[in-house]
Image 1 (cartoon, helix red, strand yellow):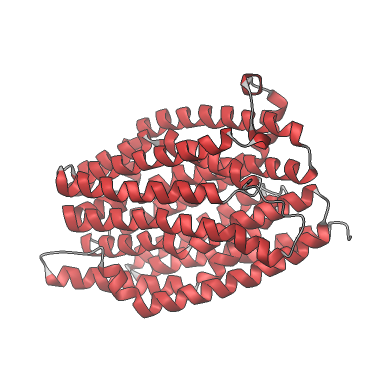
Image 2 (image 1 turned 180 degrees about the vertical axis):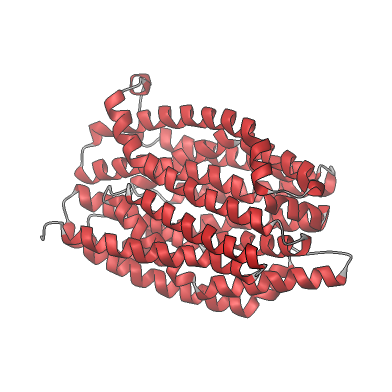
Amino acid sequence: MTDTRNMTRGRPLGLLFRFALPLMFGNIFQQLYTVVDTAIVGRGVGMDALAALGTVDWLNWMLLGLATGLTQGFSVRVSQKYGEGDLPALGAIVGQSALLSGIIALLCVLLSQLGVPLFLKVLRVPGELRSMATLYIRILFGGFPAMMFFNYCSAMLRAIGDSKTPLAAMVTAALTNIALDALAVFGLGWGIAGAAAATVLAQCLAGVICARKLARTPALRFGKAHLAFRPALAASLLRLGLPVAVKNVIISVGGILLQSIVNGFGMAFIAGYTSTNKLYGLLEIAALSYGYAITTFVGQNFGARQYGRIRRGVRTALLLSVATAAAIACVMIAFGRPITGLFLSADDPAMLAQAASTAYRYLCLMAICLPALYLLYAYQAALQGLGQTAIGLIVGTLELCLRVGFALFSGAIRWAEGLFVAEVSAWVGAAILLCVVYYRHVRSLPCD
């Protein structure tokens, strides 16, 4: 029985939800091990270790954004060709995507390791946290090929409608990472280094699971001949992947600059801010999953030239996204205090109270503005499915300006809550821009 899904037929709501649901469960487990990792570090090593992890968190997000952006861009061409029914062309695209992913992963490891001292200087990591932050981020940077490997394999599978294998991979990796985290931190006493190593090993396992399924999927098989460098094909793939990747990197640069300002507000504020940021992944789980579903849906139907179906499907996805965001927001506002408290421990009651207050205030603002984040993902995914990835550069620049602008102003006047506004303002601004661009572009498509 095949796990692929043709999204050019059937009701859009059912197709989108059934495709996204396994990805949601997979992302829940993926975020579960992020949350557990944070809780283990915070409670097993200490608040200083949690703060150290938070000071460099955006560096990890930068490389993750690079990996997901490139592979998502590559997968757009796969979904379009699959929708067209042009299966003979898929082998060359999948193989060339593998070659590009491998080359870029190796280059990123080299450049990121060389850049660690500069990154820590830009982030203004406090001296007492610098050694732990350096160790943690060097291990994660060294494991970047594993991150790229998993994202490449899962993106290829999602492009032809297989969302179940990435689910199995993420669940297995999450459970493995939790076990390794506990062993490394509590059992072996390896501290923050053990937590980072457990994450890398879990990503390796997830990549292997997806790679085995990819090799057994006829539409995605490729041979040695497909791994030869083909300049024209490589250029067409990079034209799709690079804008998304660069957009993610630009957003991460904004996050890095924001974090550098956060790092000047003291240990308790850093710890509280970090604990809420670790919930960011949980907040956006459904948005990411719907985004993958929308890109695949739009890409396949664009390849099949079913433009009216694209319009109907995206409208359905927008309603589904907003409803989901509202439900998640209600849960976070109601139960945010005990959830953020899972990450925090300190001998000083005053410091603990300050960190907990920071975490909850930030979480509430995120929850209220969550529909804007979900609309951002939905419009962005639809444009990616249409092959319009270049808009990501403009969106990323806008987010950078809003995030950094608010952060600089807040830092200058020592307004801590302004740092919370800096994040959500980037969501709102980007969502408005993407909405305008999407409707302008979709009106230019032929009617059917």
